[in-house]
Length: 395
Ligand SMILES: Cc1cc2nc3c(=O)[nH]c(=O)nc-3n(C[C@H](O)[C@H](O)[C@H](O)COP(=O)(O)OP(=O)(O)OC[C@H]3O[C@@H](n4cnc5c(N)ncnc54)[C@H](O)[C@@H]3O)c2cc1C
Image (cartoon, rainbow, N blue to C red; front, side, top):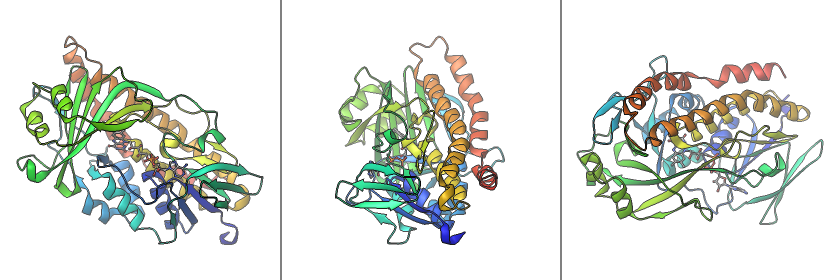
């Protein structure tokens, strides 16, 4: 088998592409990553990893790095009304009670994923623009004139994916009428902030989320506000801290206290796409946001990309060059339904927290937020590995 193991090219060195490369190296596969940017990097914002992906990070040897760079959030995590009234605890463990929910600085996470890869795996300054394939081989051409041949090409090139139209005709992303303001505040500036919890305030049509990153040195905040403005040109842009402060004026004084320390903020328009009917064509498949961009209201976009990478690595480890198209279909079949449920769940959660234009249904909304713990327990308990092993065995 090792003689005929496929050569794999991943286009896109974001969280999805870099984790997939780690999972493939752990399976002894031959993989290269091509990233358009001259060097790897990420925006100054946080995200959180949850037990359903942390179990895979541990399996490929990244558990200690996650513990080192992450900030574990625990039992004090809460949903609150805009005035600070406590609604319910936030579920941070899986159904077995395992707590592995960490706030992460995006740049730290990209660094830890890249640092674990052999030096010759990542090729920066390679923007993929053209994909061709025959029955035997696939080829990617980059803007720098380089062409590479591979047995498998994985498009992990994000929501604007350049390669996706080779799989499915272009579609229009769905704008959800919400902008998120994101940013970081050093703990030194708010020394009294609790660094062991995830807190979310839900008010009329808006919500505000805070959790720690970088083992508690930095606080990450996200303020979600409605807007009529579609940010067509650029989906992220610098924001005005005073406008952000005005949006949450009169909310829990803790929010005003934190926002008083904000010097810079970023606006991020919230888009997703309808689930694609297919992710694969021949030797090309999609992974992460290229396949399934989703709203951030379950914090699952990157976590689902990690599940994708783990599944694909396990399946490709049992694949020879000739059976690549069948293997990619098996991956897609395994992942598409799970991810469509999570995409839908993120939309529903967004409606739950952002559609309250008045307070008439507040009790109902609060009850739904409390009951949501059950959904998260099962979301986090899911382990893609046994299913991927079964799919690989059936090839
Ligand atoms: C406000 C907000 C909060 C979020 N919070 C969370 C959270 O808490 N938890 C979570 O799991 N997810 C969260 N997400 C979602 C998460 O950020 C994304 O799902 C995740 O980053 C997707 O990773 P990716 O690698 O698929 O794509 P990307 O991160 O977009 O990476 C794509 C990479 O491909 C490169 N690239 C693009 N085109 C090309 C090309 N043609 N050739 C070569 N390289 C190319 C890009 O430069 C980039 O490095 C959040 C999103 C938003 C907007």
